[in-house]
Image 1 (tube, rainbow, N blue to C red):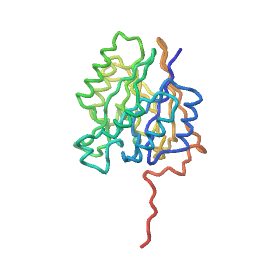
Image 2: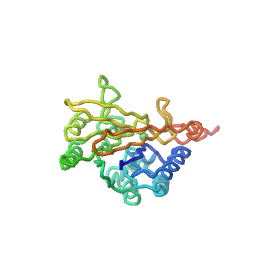
Image 3: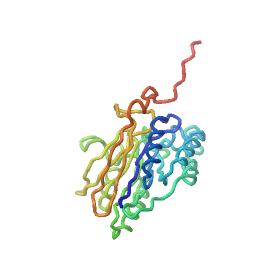
Length: 266
Ligand SMILES: [Fe+2]
């Protein structure tokens, strides 16, 4: 019996695509995946109201939920909290609706790539800190004799779109090489709002990069809202199926980067 995961990302409650979320909820109810895995950007500005909406939606899903924070999930309007305890609001959500996957086919290992500030702009780009990487590598190494597939879950893709260009994730190349060497089969991510599924190589080691796209109205590069079904079975290759939300369900008319405010004529 294989393990089927729904991989979703970048829901961005506050500018969520409600029709797309309704479609995912319908599919979860109909297909009963082993878990719904969301690789971050659960909210748009980490407002309490946005976290409340996220909590309501994730709690309504009839499947275990595995979460990872994204750069949008740290307080945006409260700098004190952003720097003193950036993941407090996220932890509350995760405590309420999140869990860990239990599967005979696959293990999920988290990698934090989100930082509250960094010495460059934009702060939204990924950074793999040595301590975060060491924890993830140690978790993978502890699983070395475990025959299950190993999937790293992170918000940011570890590599840029092609090997010739710059990598927007600081430390991403070294992290990719270390995770691949430690036995990770794939790294699941979001952030770019465009789906991907490709094998890349660093340090002579191949690893698959799998991205889900977005379920928000913040569409990028013409990519419609999407999610991905990932199927893992012992001793068999991991298979994935990208599911694009049809336009009539995705409601592209709501594709605005931020909540719309009508300009007042004074
Ligand atoms: Fe995002």
